[in-house]
Length: 259
Image 1: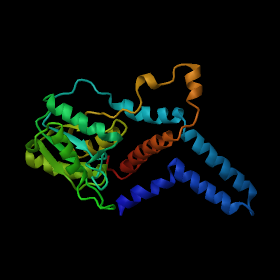
Image 2: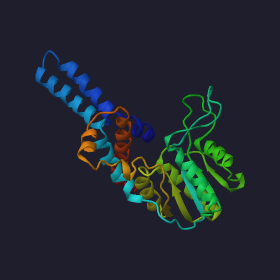
Image 3: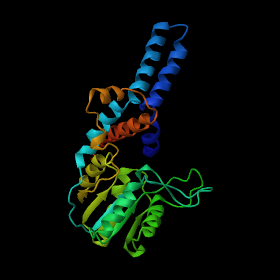
Image 4: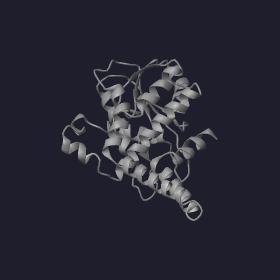
């Protein structure tokens, strides 16, 4: 139940869902409450405009991504890679698809080849809503092997559906294998919440963030660049929504004492 609530309720908080809700209310109030209608429409326009600007996208993402800037990483017992980076190989896809967060898998393979850890644990299940036959963990394992990581050095955690379960279900696997020091690989914006959860469970974790969406050179530094950062672009709504998801997750997890 928590999984479904955590996935669907936030849709009414994300910019697109909130704007649709406000416009629907405006339509409902159209004849009886014209003032409310104007407020609802104006609010939805403001939300859509602001959430589609690089200005808000950068502000929200930078606060998350800059918390764990990578440096020289220590050696560890295991590299733990969190799911959310692949699409299942359902027809007509010829193989596993790598999404935006696929940097997680590439980064983990690089760390393994650099000798940072002798084992890699991949964590992620998948709800079978579209005929999926494999978990995210299995998909990531397949890609890691393609990149040269031996199957014998890959551990699978294929049951988790969210970040908290990533940590909860990975912990007994790591303990059974005697693996204590962890290099945690996930997207930079997702790392603050992930770290809190793993450390709350008492695990020895070092962040190995990747998939940085905002590079230093992309920050507006001139008046012209700042003006351009106010122009709307549709893809920014996605990034703002993802950032809001992280802030909301941090709030809920702390409220429940999970982080």
